[in-house]
Length: 345
Image (cartoon, rainbow, N blue to C red; front, side, top):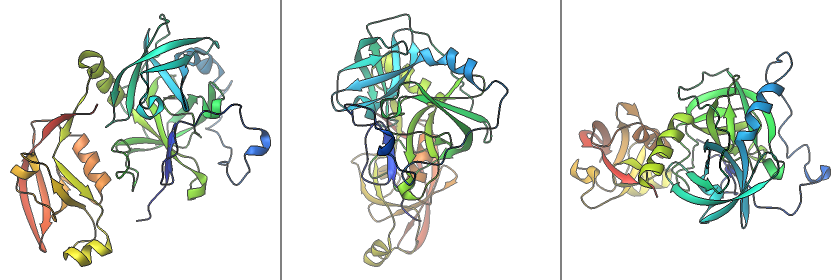
């Protein structure tokens, strides 16, 4: 499978996927700064009488910009004095600036970060911020999708498209981030700076927090991704209550199965997640796994890649017993693993 680039929307990652955050610029780009080859084609969702103006006017005050030294992104009001954004937007900063839709700014304190899901919470000095409705059930592919954020510093920019897919994993992303799995895909155009912004449905409910996109130079046309609201609310509640979020844990380091790995280790399968190490006393060790094994099924789901394994693990509960199939020395072996837990700070 071709390894895709991506961008997390507040910083550029090394592979072609991009985070929606952006490096802070002194001024917005001029019209000549973006060529037609660099920008995704303009498009919109199906026409709606009157457009989305009323919806956008209602929800925009709940979408903010988040700035720190060296970077910027977007955020969504979660509580009257708490904003949720991406962890890569705040970076290692403890203090950020939150710019509201009315142009005023308020200092913000980062009160919780979860690196596994790439989410962070910021408490604002100014309270009384309007809280939008969050939709916890997943949208259906084909539903209208509206993105609001601050791409390249253009605050509260609005784009529209549809929900393109669910439970998406970005191939090749696991080496840099565990967060790019089990995502909502949309063709609503998003750009650097949209990270942490809102992805809305046709009723103005938040269905996800924008996370990443695959840029045009990778051959993509409007491939954007968002963290589902159910995940956002679960992690946010844990961060607010305990300061950390707990995640399922196997205790393995995994890598891609490549032709070189196949030749060197004598691996007989060309897919799966190669176990490169097992933590001491980890659930995987107790289940009999060791370095060199290739996980090909977990929790009843086929594992074609590392991202598949991370996605399947994300959907399990700590303490649950899950079936696991692996290949060792050309033989398929079956075991059962009791999923552990770890924090994602």
